[in-house]
Amino acid sequence: MMITLSSCDGRDKAFRSTQSDLFENKVLDTFTAPIHYYPESYAEKVTDTILSNGYKVHIKLYSDMNNAIIIKDEERTHFRDFIVDVKITKENKSIFNDTIDKAFLLDKELFDVNATKQFLVQDFWIENIEYNGTPTLFLEYINPESRKNRVLKFIFLEDELLFEEVI
Image 1: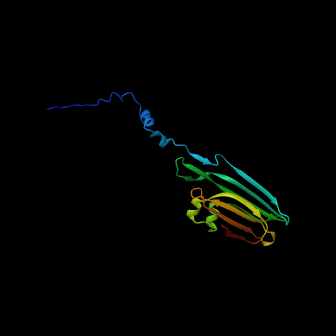
Image 2: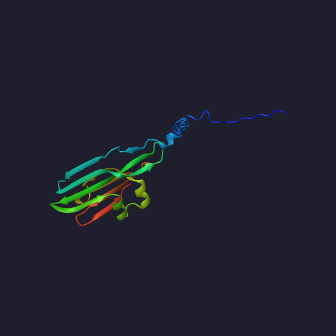
Image 3: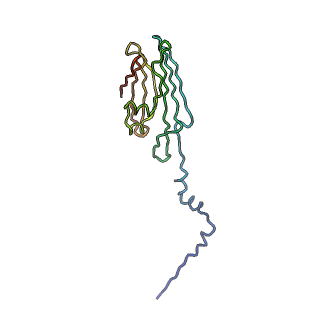
């Protein structure tokens, strides 16, 4: 008959720190995974346009440094949203002066609550082809996770604002 006794007194672990154990087992990496922001810092694009029919269009697109959409991937990527300030005048009369952000989209029922959480402004452009040269703003929205796009068209008539989803 054979009896084997074994014991562990912990001498091999006595002088190791918790941090070194976490580092060896790569557990520390889960807590210190890098977070990437796009854009990394404040970004702004300003456009001042005077149309031949007398409309003056001022658009300021800037990154929202307080809100982002988080994509749960290996790098935990945060995509910052953009806010659009729009000011349109004709012959010194204000046609439109407002901020187009998520609250505006919800208020005008252009996006539902889920869409505002998923879509970000990607780009904009101005046209004055339709409605007798009335300024038309196109805002392109993107879902950074699915890469799906939506384009909203804002038509600034002198007495009302029209909306239309193009894509």
